[in-house]
Amino acid sequence: MLLTLSPCCSSGCKVMVWAGAPCSICRTSSSMLCSEICSLGCTTVVRTGTQYRDIVMQGDLYRIGTPYDKSGCYGLMYVSKARKQAVLFTYSLRYQGRSLIPKFRLQGLDPKTGYTIRELNVDKSRNWFDGKTFSGEMLSNAGINPSMPKIYDSGVFLLTAE
Image 1 (cartoon, rainbow, N blue to C red):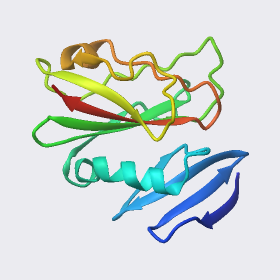
Image 2 (tube, rainbow, N blue to C red):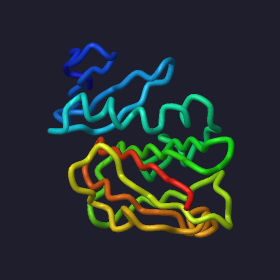
Image 3 (tube, helix red, strand yellow):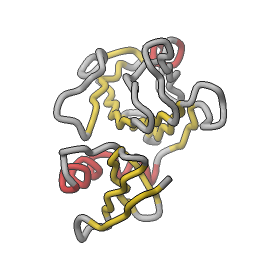
Image 4 (cartoon, rainbow, N blue to C red):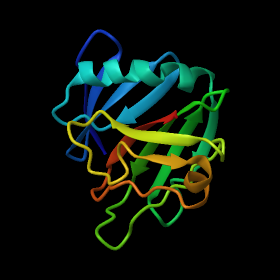
């Protein structure tokens, strides 16, 4: 249930409170991207959005999971045409707790290339893989498991080829 929607800056960013969980919707041309901002503020979300704007607008889209299955998690991944950068948006639609840990097997990456993963829009990452480098093959086969314990949690991850 959407409770509030109010503009927070002139760049097209709006703050939305959905069942008590604040998140931002930042408009990048025709694409709507949602990520949790809590205390970071709109300018941080807009500034980090410029890091992946070209990937979203010109890259290939891969849907990872579906919001309609029993896991309650899904993701959208955009990969640049050269497969040198990617951005992953993860969403949790249900309470995950300690027993359910979502796993995202990333698609569209070069299996022989190493990718460094950075979580965006957070002060301190809550994920063990933040800042680490993994092969595209490992990310495609084993995947990553971002921490999203609360309902409506989300994450934005930037992958850069080494």
